Amino acid sequence: MKRILGYYLKPYYLRMAMGFFIKFTGTIMDLLLPWALAHMIDVVIPENRSGDIIKWGLFMVFCSVVAVVFNIVANRMAARVASDAIYTIRQDLFSKVMYLSNSQVDWFTRPSLISRLTSDTYNVHQMLSRMQRLGVRSPILLIGGLSITMMLHPALAGVLLCTLPLLAAVVIGVSKKSIPLFSLYQDSLDRFVRLVREDVAGIRVIKALSKEEFERQRYDKANRQVVEKERLATITTAVTNPAMNLFLNLGLVGVIFVGAYRVNAGLTQVGKILAFMTYFTIILNALLSISKMFVLISKGTASASRMEKVFSAEDSRTLKLLEKEWTDEKDCHIEFDHVSFSYNKKRNNLEDISFCLKRGETLGIIGATGAGKSTVANLLMRFYDVDQGAIRIDGKDIRSMDLKTLRQKFGAVFQNDVIFEDSIMENISMGRNLTKEQAQEAACYARAEEFIRDKGGLEEALDVRGANLSGGQKQRLLIARALASKPEILILDDSSSALDYKTDAALRKGLKERYSQTTCIIIAQRISSIMNADHILVLDEGRCIGYGTHEKLMADCEVYGEIGKSQMGIEVEVNG
Image 1 (cartoon, rainbow, N blue to C red):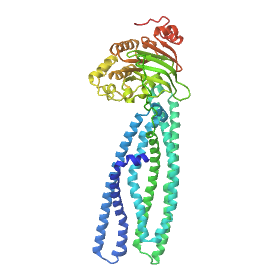
Image 2 (cartoon, rainbow, N blue to C red):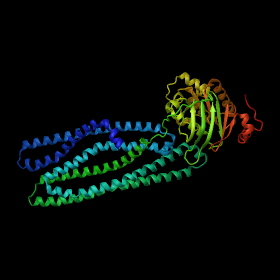
Image 3 (spheres, rainbow, N blue to C red):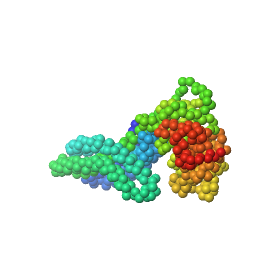
Image 4 (cartoon, rainbow, N blue to C red):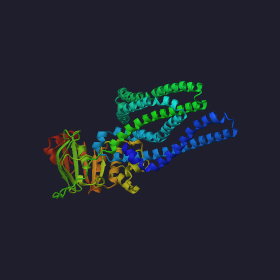
């Protein structure tokens, strides 16, 4: 909350102060109406002064008009401030999420980040908007109403004041319990969003395996948990209104008894009693509005706390200042120097990996599922930092390089990469202001030119996640995206699994001819995709069990030889 109140609302302090003044003026006009009515009933009407009746009537009309106009203006200003502030908050929160390290994204979880960007920002928006409206008007009505009732009739006001400590106890007690409950509700909502995302993304697999009923039961369980958490939180806050109504109505009964007695005894006037009853209604509505505001504050505070955790997340990937310049005697473009890494910091996913690639060379990486192949790419692009050892590009430790500068060197295609609901051109360009000719050239070398032409050209729109493309078409489009910026380093992570052997071979040939100075790392399950690479790294449970050319590994590496024989037959013919 400190960040929101002290930083994001600071540019709007002047506008909020003006809105407060306007709202204050309009509310005072509302408070003057019952007082003016009491004066007319007790003083003006008994004296039969028709001129004064008209004057006081016009005064009440004036107060009513000013109250309506000023309250409308103040509400519009409050809505504008809340909208502008939440726009900036959303922008900054999204930017922060985009720059979170992969380990931080893993810790928060993607569904939780989505929830913080959507439902949490909505709750904070509602809180900011209502705070400026109810948070100004209701306290003024409450304090002003109590002050005027004290002046009108101290004895009756005393009866009303006796109920205030009970009302305060209800609001404070409910708020203390409801804020943690709303935090728990948001956490359960995160898990619910994660399940929905998984089910929607895998809906074809669910249908293919006839697991609709199983997923429906999982959904029902998660849905019930969300409903139970929300019900518990709302039931807790629901105590507020009935309890406040009870205490206020008890106070009202006391006021009526005391007022009736004093009117009967001639100690007070009817107009004051009517005014007092009107002020009592005003005070009642003000307190009910304040109770609603505390519910919004409970939600908003819980959401603001969750957002603050994202804002305050410190990136561990700081720039590393090297004590001395590294002398690269091997002339390596990319070097892994005894690299070890673990995602959970318990068991290494990569252990003591070393290799050197000169500019323009190609490294093929192969191994069983979970062997650590994609981890090599994640570390090279610094999505995670190594635990031991070093990774260097042109002899410079990547931890000493600016992240933006580092990643501009890469073109990459990852497993399960994303195609956006946009044109083919925008999916290749990705906001890099590429020309149509550059996109067409990249598509040509990615062997995507023919199907793009058949689809209607670069301006053809694609569905969400490229649903109107085949698996092979998606992979060729993603490769075109990676090639479009003519990268210094190209990473292809299982990016040809859906391509036929002929297309795969033509693609590799085109890369070798056109991008001869681009250092390539190809992660594959098929030996045919990497057999012509300058170096091949064979991984097993994060360890290097083979490194060399295809011929050398077929002769010396048992695991690689078994893979080769199973995929290509015992007699493997090397394509030149």
